Image 1 (cartoon, rainbow, N blue to C red):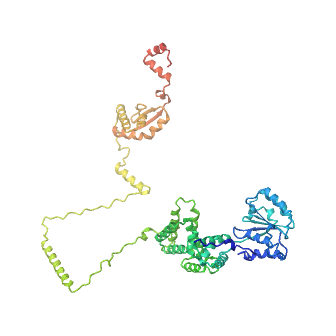
Image 2: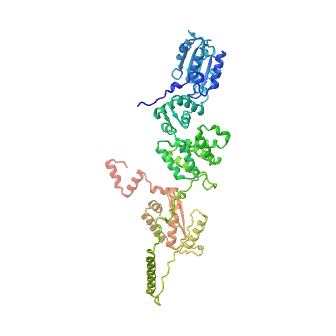
Image 3: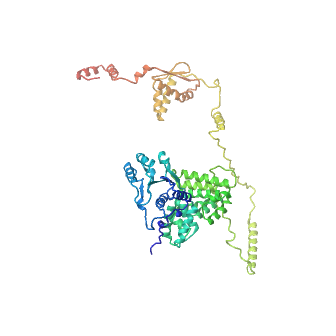
Length: 580
């Protein structure tokens, strides 16, 4: 069976009376034709699909019909169309200008329709400007464009401009209803409104969509069939989502969104449609703005009922959240999570009615169902005459058992001592390392570990230089064993000397080494004070650049040192003519 197809082209307007939603423009053009006041340059501008080119063709046929022509007479050869999108060069405009000079053979006017005129190049506009300023009496130019702001001002100033508006959903739905009646198609009013909304003010798109949907659905056109074929979410989905949001039911709301995604819909489509739904609910809040709601009457009643449940503050917050999600959707790496978070925030707006942060979300523990003990799982048995004596015998036997147990309980011996209960001490409250109390606790700990003593009370036993050097070497060896070889090497650079009774003096070759030793000198001093039992020891570090020569020799200096130790090396060098 072949699919039932409606020819949408058949119902496109053939006369000005058939033009939908542009009555003011068509009446103005008809009056200009009747009174012979039609301008020679017209500019039709407006959105795509609203009938600009169609009105231009109807006008081109209408202006040559003065009532004296035959019924089968056609003036199509007086109409010339040029697509400026593909013919936008200077040569194309020159060919057009050459045709304009020739007067019509039949009829009064030759009409030149230039579609998408804003696509002409700058040089093409300049070439066309002279002809548009002083056109022949028999030539009428009709320019059609969707972007009037791209046309140069010199062209706009020489045209009579007609702004085509978007066709309203109501007018488009009524015309689709007329087509459905002509084709004996049973179409629901809601289905036609969805088609009109999908067309976005373009009657041409509405006819094409209607043609496509009917080819799949046949003569029974329901709202469900239209939403499935056009991949449009039904109103019921948004009504259900809004009810769940008002009920603070986050789990069911997320399941509804998951079901929507499983049907093949996009998350961006869902959240933008939900924002439109909240806008429509906000429109229903005031009786003067209900006319802005472009839906069928049955759906309008649903909107009116749900608008009573939601206050204006709630709708404004949800619109803000939905708009924020819409803006962030394309840049988000986890788009599903973004929509789910937005839905959870929406469902948390009316929770408890308290003032909350903007990003507040109802905790998951609120939705945990605590299973109450099932008392009806095992209903009590009815007591019959047969069960009563059995219950009495069971009770008597339980009493006898209790008496026997009491008799068998022995008294505790005289020396019996009960075990002590284990006392569990509460853990000491720990102090945060970033608080003021931690400083106080640290000082107390230091006082316990090493109580403060005055300098007079500390021991200052005398020691010899040899003892000091021995402990010095022991400590550097300990550092070396622990892996701190650089610090041990710095301490071993010079032999420490006892400058006075309590001052140890070392001489280092450079300032860098001095800084490194000064940073770690406390380790050495603490060790020496403890071993020598003298807490008045201090360390003096000086720098002598000349001592560096001991550690950085040039090749000549190395040779001189070897020659001093063994003069025979010089004879060996001269014998074999070697370099040092």
